[in-house]
Image (cartoon, rainbow, N blue to C red; front, side, top):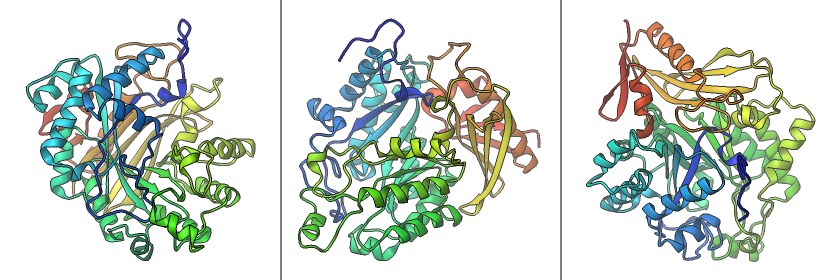
Length: 454
């Protein structure tokens, strides 16, 4: 890799959302329920390929969480990215189904690497991380909807997790049965509600083109995800179904029993989906990074989103999803006359308040998710967008560290008081605890808590 020039940030889009994402891959392990028909069998973590970049890095380091984290920090620093505010993303399988002692050891290895010091136990490592140079401000765990019990959620909070991605794929029990998914719609509904009440930010993986579906049905299911209050995720990843080597689906394809969507079908469908995404949801990814030589049949363009968004911007389409509106992904000569906006919607038998700081062009500078349920108020996410900069630093052209987070939090507290809540809780990453302490919050179990004036 070419060494960056002075003050040059290589691959700047990696930290344009305000944080530095560090992916850590789990060692290969079969899913407890067996294999979905679309899942390949390639002697690597479930649903990945031997040539996936994250797998190549992880295998070289024997899937050691400490070494992987350390290596990614060094790589980001070599590209001149800030590395003080880190989001850890666990990839490669249903983490909560691994042995419990492995889970604690794996998570501790990540915090130890961020701290640059090996602690005696997880609690000590997390305590150290509150003021470390590389702070874990968010931690994401992927799981299945049927592996998300109250006990699982409690353990994820022990780990410092703040975001959970659920492998939803489709909301159709008949499709689940035909692809051997091993869970039901009820599992999706229950997991979503538990996670939301615990304050987690919730992501869904959506898979258009599964056997038993078609573009029209996919679109109907997509509409239902955002119209039915039992769902309404905060984020989605759109991973179209492709035929991969070693999967049962490959046998179906070779026998003429299944055909994936064409590029034209997929582009049309995703364009329609993007127009339906509400302003409180972020489309995290479109397409999996699967090397073409590991696709037996299906669309191989992993940068399809780039073409779709270019088309949407060219036509000046009214797209409301978060990433499309983020300040970091929009033109530079923006109005800095900022205003506060609130969107209220029902979800999982509670009220959701989506707070935003936007300009007159509806470009997004910061957001906060506040949940009110049974007299309790919890902040599920506080995020200020724009190119990441290190803690304590300010820049005339940066949107971070300008007081936008405090503004949003203050407005959330006012709403919670109007809702007659006695206190407000925040699901905080370990490395953000100091920020909330400075704003009058105190640590209570795994949440930051502040008493309100009521």
